[in-house]
Length: 105
Image 1 (cartoon, rainbow, N blue to C red):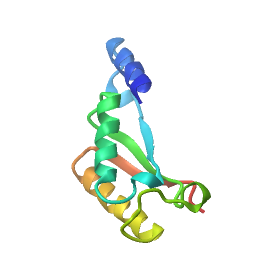
Image 2 (cartoon, rainbow, N blue to C red; image 1 turned 180 degrees about the horizontal axis):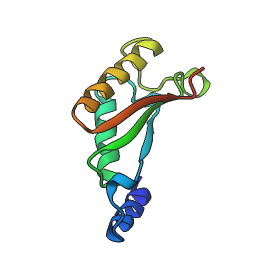
Image 3 (tube, rainbow, N blue to C red; image 1 turned 180 degrees about the vertical axis):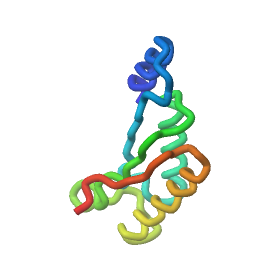
């Protein structure tokens, strides 16, 4: 994320307005439970030097090999739902413009 953040800053220095950039990132299964979605998103924003992301995707619902990472508080479906709720709250705060999914079947 830091390299992308440097590129975004360089574009801003050349006069490219933020509204001309559409920045997408994804949240993997290991960040689906607990406070991890919030913590990870805020870290992404810090590394990118941005106030908001245009699109955040919940990526790969089951993780590699069926592992969902640190999902100690429920099933894979419950952890995905937790992540969606947390990201929806961050969207309401203006930190995310759009939510989606990737690699879901």
